[in-house]
Length: 353
Image 1 (cartoon, one colour):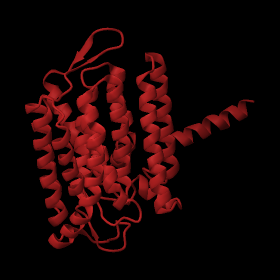
Image 2 (cartoon, helix red, strand yellow; image 1 turned 30 degrees about the vertical axis):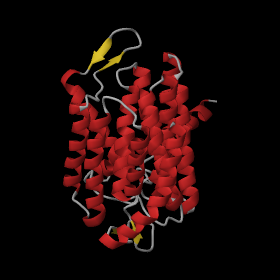
Image 3 (cartoon, helix red, strand yellow; image 1 turned 180 degrees about the vertical axis):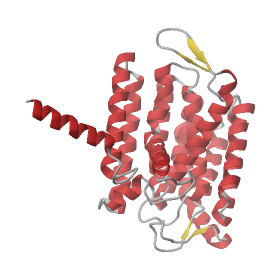
Image 4 (cartoon, rainbow, N blue to C red; image 1 turned 90 degrees about the horizontal axis):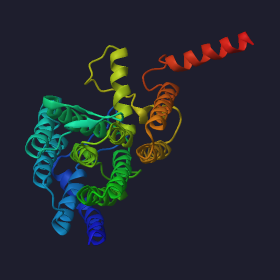
């Protein structure tokens, strides 16, 4: 039944996207080019609505049961309404933030989706207590915005989200979690159908409607799949979402270094840096897809690692991320602490010989 549902979702998305495109032009949900954007013409940006409607079709067909189903759907409605309004009239960051907290709060407080403790490798556990709820809300809001931040090129957010959903679905199958497998697969099939119209050259953008919805669903599903587990398993969803998380992290560092507000927009995200490095639009998107796939594979490998092996794996992964960020100038052209340190060590080693 699940395979039939996924096929229905995929083709529903394909059929609905052209209709949503017409609706976007009719209601003024369009994206005009400016100095910060890559596209050169007015584009419809309500595509996320097609993803969401296909997602709802999938839920109605498969009817995956679970205690979290109703809170997740109600939270998604808040997210979708917020995204639609933003795509039409561009809401303020404050309004969007409040809506995201409301959606996350429904899932966390009403649905009970929150990380209450972590089992430690050497025995015992860390109880989050009263911090459990705010920490989980921060995770949902943070990942929601991280997906939104990488939505800067044709097919980028949809592709990266799809890769993350494939990884989450695969991990859920390994862990025997039928609900997460079903819901993640439905979102995946709906997103892939939309990606046919969204890949470069895009005919429609997903807009905040799509980026916020995908970020919300990925953040919640990753929590459902990995909550209340060991320290190693707790790190798995962070690795799965390595591309949007690292891009957001370095964006924060970049703004702190340049003494700019954290909410200030700029043109120095991962995709901007790769474009400046000389890669084409399509090459940049495919490179970031490859990075997302690498993180997905790394998450699966890490989930099977022992404690010591997992520790060294994370250290190597962090060094690779930092080196890559410095090489492409993700924080700034002059921000190269690790490269400079490696050069000093190399010169010192050569002189000692």
